[in-house]
Image (cartoon, rainbow over all chains, first blue to last red; front, side):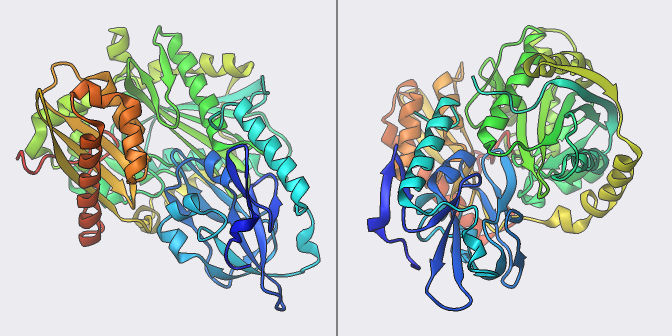
Length: 160
Length: 380
C-alpha cells in the first residue's frame, strides 16, 4: 500500500478519511504497512483533520534516515500559521525514508494527506506491538473521526 | 461549554523588565521544564515582561537575514534572536509587553483552541483599559481593525507549552522600519503611513501614554478572569535560572540557532491594479508557495476596511488561483476598489510568481517584515 487506494477514501462530515490503514487518535497520525517484508515497514502521515486543526502548514521538519523513533515521542516538528509543535510518532522503529517532497512543499500534505503527502517510513521494531493503541477497524475509525469532527466543530476549532 | 485549556487556582506570576533578547527567550524556555511529562502537575506560570530597547526577534523558521537588517541592528545596538514560536519578525522594547504563558500542553488540545483561548485572555486584559480587541481567526489580536498584539504557540518535545504574545503599548514605527528588513529609502514616506494604517497601540487607543510595563496589571487581570485564577507573584527558581543561563548561551545566542532556517525559500513581489480611483499596488511576501503577507498601497483617503480584510484573508494562504479568488471575493475588496475580483486575484498571483522567481534566484535575499512586505521598485 504505497499509494493511497482511492477506493478506500471516504468522506466523513466533509473530511476525507482513508480506511485502509490505522490511526493514533490523539495525534491524528495514520500508520499504513508498506509491503509484506521483514522487518515490517510502516508509512506514517497526518490525517485530514490533523492537518486542518493545525492550520496552514508552513514548515515540516522530518528526521533523518537511520534515526530511532519511540512510540509517543516526537520525531519532527511542524510550523503552521501561529503554531510550532512536535510531530509525535505512533510507532517505534528506525526511519528508513523521509518524504523530501513534503518537506520541501508542506502544501502536499494538505492536498493529499493520505497519499503523496506522507511524512516518513519506519522499519518497525516489533510488528506485533505496533498495533497497540491504534484504531484499525473501519467502523471504529469512522466513529472516532466523526466524534472528533463534531467535538472540534462544537468548540469552533474547525468550520461548520 | 468545554473546560478551559488550563486550570484555575493559584498561578505563578513573574514580572521582569529590560531583559536581553537571548536572556528573555531563554527564560521562557527554561520555565517549560517543570511542565514536562512525568513531572508532578504544577500550576501555570504567567510571565509579563519587557525587553531592553530594542530587540529584534524573528519567528522559528524565518530566515534571519531576510527579515532583519543586521547592519542597522549593529548601528542601533539592537539585539537579535530567534523565538521558538512561529509568526513574523517583531521589534520589542520598553514600549511592548511580552506575555508568556507556560504550562503543560493538554492532551488532545489543538493549536487553534489554545491560541484562541489565550488571545481571549489578552483581549480581556485590554478590555480593562477600555479597548475592544478581537482575535481574528488564525491571525492577530486587532483593535479598531488594526493589529495590537501578535501571538504564537509552541509545544516542546516533552509536552511543555509556551504561549507568546507581544502587546503594543506603544510603537516607534520609524525605528521598526529601520531595523526590520525594508529598504526604506525608496518608500519611506509611504511605508510609515501604510504601517500606521494597519497597526495600533494601547497609547493610541486610549489617548494616554503607555509603556509595556504599565499594561501588566490589566493583562494579569485578563488572564485571572478568563481562567478563574489568582496570580501569586513569584520568580524563577534556581534550577530554572541556571537552565535559562545555559540556554541563553547555548541556544539563543548561538550562530547555529540564529542561522537555522526553513527549507522553503522566502520571496517578495508586487503587481499593479488599475482602479477607478487610480493605481493601487499589491505587495506580497512569500514562504514557498504560501503568502506570508500582503499589502495594498494606493492613494486611499481612508483605507477601505475590505482591503484590510483581504490582506488578512490572504495571509497563510497558498498561491492557488481558486483559494486567492475566494479570499478576495469574501473580503469584498473588489467592490471597495471598484474592480472585478478576478483582476485583483490575477495581480496577487502575478506578484506571487515574481516572488517565487526571486526566491529561486536569491534564496536568502528576500525582504519584508510582518508589517510591511517590499517597497515599490517601480515607484522608486
